[in-house]
Length: 196
Image (cartoon, rainbow, N blue to C red):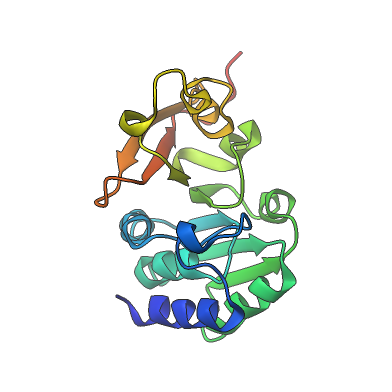
């Protein structure tokens, strides 16, 4: 595990941030290791990355540990205590900017992005507009489709995350993590223009 990720885990423990979904009290939980490794792989080829929902900085640490030296990462967290903890983690890395505030408006001013990690809530159609052509958006904290019971509301277009990935401007898929209990949704923006 990269040193920066270890430092983010230590910061999460110091502030009592949930490290697993099982510890969460409905206010979020840390980026899972499988998600982190996937984000690091994507970040390795980026020039600009955005993250909605910093938490204590674990997801951002995975991405920052792999991104190129000339890449920038802008991450936003609404909770001031979490944002402060993440800011400490990245104090020595000028490539990373931690913003305290509502995520979407905060990162909107810094795009377009090659990679967006939306770790702070449901899907928003406007996220596609923040991606460069060929840019990717990743959402985590999903139960794999194969584990959902028939008729689950999480299988419909009304689900905020899965519905978002039905956008005609994205080519998307579900990635099941190695634990087989958690999944990601990943989409690539197909063009720079909105459909007519």
